[in-house]
Image 1 (cartoon, rainbow, N blue to C red):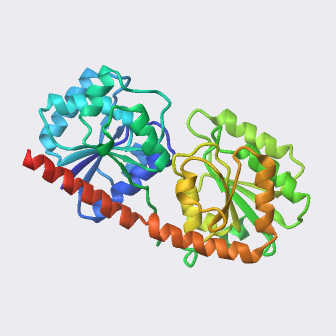
Image 2: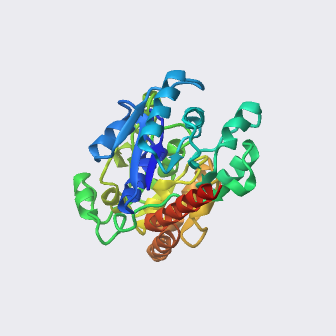
Image 3: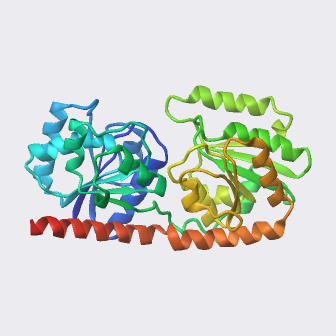
Length: 375
């Protein structure tokens, strides 16, 4: 089976990272997978470093005649079994290219981010009519797809993103290495969050809640993992300024972007996920896989992952005092932290193991290909 995976994005966040992760797992299943991406994007560079076969596009806007012709030629030459895109805007390139190439191969969309725009006009109907299957990464995204696009309900399926539970394994991680790197004492309780610096991720609430709980406990450190998104350096500077002017500035650690995510997470004792709106929340899944108890905002895709009072405490989003209260409950109870952490890893293994998810994707591929052959 030969598959073209599309993700035309200049950003470097959860969607782009997962595109590469899922593509590599497909190759493990002996699927010949190739990536279509923007030339010299972060995604392109990371793919090359991983040895992934790539094709590039310079498509922009809704209509790029030259890029459509180029991709149509690529489709004809490579005889793909199907195309799977991780970005809905790519459909404006893919659908015309498939038409131009007179190709009837299946077209799959994975929807990672919701939209507030209703897309049921003539042009969107023409585009989405060519989509054979849409995979929603959470219940909230599934509902959003049905509400905002002309896709038929029977074409929309729920399929969570997955992670490598062997890689994210507390038994394999270097907790001491990271804590030594940042001069964290053995008795310190580390509360961490991991997200790109972007408005709505909850950095402000995290720092304010940290100030509240630090007034009651002396052995706390707060770890903030991540870097600004493309074009959001000023927001990152605002967050660092907020921390620098905080009364607990000496307790806040900025790690920057890290590739040793399992080790970084292993250094934490409690994970905070204060995002205002999240389609799913891969960072939360990774933290739970590491057996870390969490405090999460009660919203959107988080509800597909965390279970209140089982794996996590849920708090009202954007409510700093509720976040602080829930953090304090875990700080005060090592027993509850251990209980939540164990349940969290078990839940991830059962529902978000990437081997399980990839098997489901391949089943969908085979089903769609067989269906096309019967037509």
